[in-house]
Structures are given as C-alpha cells and as structure tokens.
Length: 186
Image 1 (cartoon, rainbow, N blue to C red):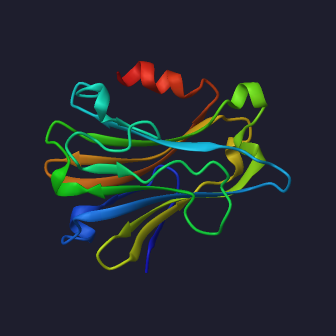
Image 2 (cartoon, helix red, strand yellow; image 1 turned 90 degrees about the horizontal axis):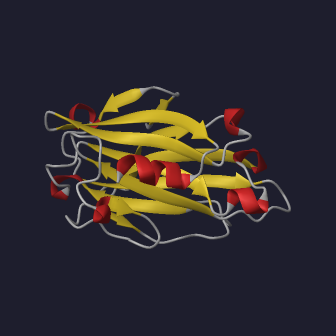
C-alpha cells in the first residue's frame, strides 16, 4: 500500500524500499471544465552549494535528460487530458551524480500571467513515486486547494542524505514565475 503524505511530510525511501533503484515521478492534475492550461514539470538538480552543478542539470521540456543520465523527462503534455499522470520524470537513483544533493520538482503554468491562468483552475493535483521494476506506487502526495492564485508549485524534493534518498512533500506555491527558480539555482 502506498504511503499518503501531507505537506511537509517525508519518507526515507532507502529504508522503506531498500531495493529501489528506478522510480517514475508522476505528476497529475485535472482541469476545471472549459479550461485549457499548459503545465510544465521542471527539475532542478541541486548541489551542496544550493546551485545546479551546470545548466544541464535543469531538466525540463527543452532539456529532457540530465548529463549524468540519472533523470529523464518524458516530454511536455500541453493539454492535461487523460486520467493518468500528465507529466513524468524517470529517475535512476544510482546514476544521479554524487554532486547532486537535492532534486527539486516544480510544476509551473506556461505563460500564466499573459493567459491569466493559475492553479485555482485545476483540481486533484498530485505527485506520486512508482517503483519502475514492480510498477507499484510507493507514495503519493495529493495537493489541496490552497494554491488558488499560484502560478507555480514546488511539489516535492528528493534529497540525498548520506547516501540515503528521502522524499519531502513540499507543497510550496508562488506567483513569481518559473524564472525565479531558474535565477535562484543557476
């Protein structure tokens, strides 16, 4: 049975799932009827100094794979149509560079300000981790409705602490744009 996390909750994946090597990070949401919103998943692979080792460690729809081969974005879903994950990132934990201490998972709304889009136009947003080898959901974090005016949300973080991988359900929303994250970590 999958662990259900609340905001701020965390799980030591290395202890809970010691054989875990490859995970699918699934991000999903449903749109309010009549809306067409383009959401984008972005990954920031952060080192001990709180920065990307190089720009190539920013994984998103224009850079689908990290240079170490540890993370791969499966591509941009511009419509959000369907019942399954809307965007997915594949992570091969042993391949993630030892320089990387944290993997930050952010979902932003493309051209949010110009289109006057915000997360209040969505519902049932979630992030889940799935063991690729067994296709079993390990954990799930369902975001609640507190992000109504936000244009981007930090869904969660994978953190490497002494060789053990932890997942933290962040649930941090903002209205400053994805560029704020890029400026902070590059």
